[in-house]
Image (cartoon, one colour):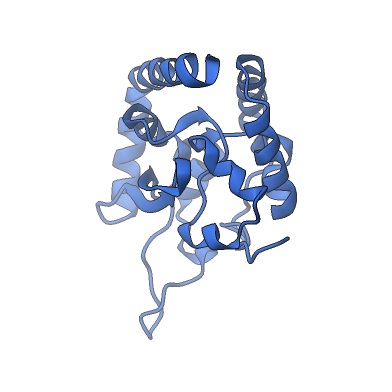
Amino acid sequence: MYRKFFKPFLDFIISLTGLVIISPLLILIIILLAIANNGKPFFFQNRPGKSGRNFKIVKFKTMTDATDDEGELLSDAKRLTTIGEFVRKTSIDEIPQLFNVLKGDMSIVGPRPLLPQYLKLYNDRQMKRHNVKPGITGWAQVNGRNAISWTQKFEYDAWYVENISFGLDLKILFRTIRKVLILEGINTKDMATTEPFNGSN
């Protein structure tokens, strides 16, 4: 009952209310990022959602498109802007995903949406993460985030799918707020993104 009816309803209400309340902050961040990124405050990318179906995720753009003399993108750390570093540290870059929640592509809580090329690398248990909508935050994020291995992250994702409940989602939300406030588990400037997943059995 909760998974099919109440969770989608709560997702819509929470995301809509959140966007209205923080709209002044969003406008300010959009302006600052547009200045830092040549008029491009948002980052769009295809990600697989429920049942592996692709959708276009939206996040704040924290890195420039700067390239070297050969036209290749510079490292993530070199492209990370000052305002982008702040937005990433405070997890503000995740806020635009509330629009994905409103559209029904994502949930507030669920396994984080990863890259499409990872789909062919999952084993059967890891693939369980696509039995539900991906989330802005999840069980893996409040249990280590970037400090744990891919194998452990996927195990947390599978466990979450098997144990979804209102109480668990509430616990994850409170733990997420705590981690954001103390800036725990974020990427540093020297490691702007996590290591890619290369498959595990």
